[in-house]
Structure formats: structure tokens, C-alpha cells
Image 1 (cartoon, helix red, strand yellow):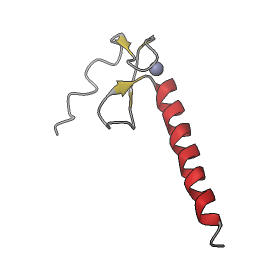
Image 2: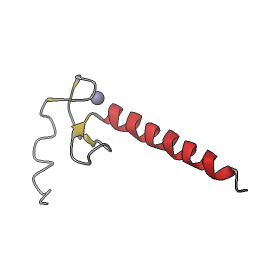
Image 3: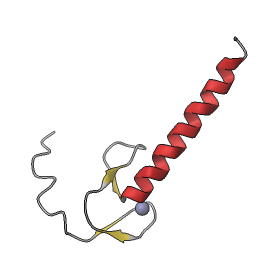
Image 4: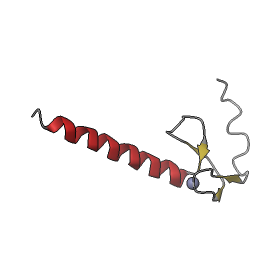
Length: 65
Ligand SMILES: [Zn+2]
């Protein structure tokens, strides 16, 4: 994949498909499919979701300890 052109227009107004808000600047990439551009707020939210899922997974493993 060629990503050299990605940063060409950082002031462009984009719409986040996750929260439907408009944003400018660098997008975050959705963790759901690793290609959808979302706002950094949603990027943080998804990172937190991921982290929570990670913690849930850890809870399961605790039984063995
Ligand atoms: Zn968003």
C-alpha cells in the first residue's frame, strides 16, 4: 500500500464515519478494519475499547494463577 499521499491535505474537512462529526487534521485509523479514517477522538475511544477487551481477556487467564 502506498501511503505517501496521505498527508497531502491536513486542513481538509473530513467526516468521521463513527461519530458523524467533522474534523480536520490527522485522522486515526479504525481498529475495526485498519483502513477507515476516523477522528482522533474516536481513535482514542477505540483504543480504550481495545484495552478494555484486553483486560477482559486477562481476567479469564487469572484463574490459572
Ligand atoms: Zn469520530
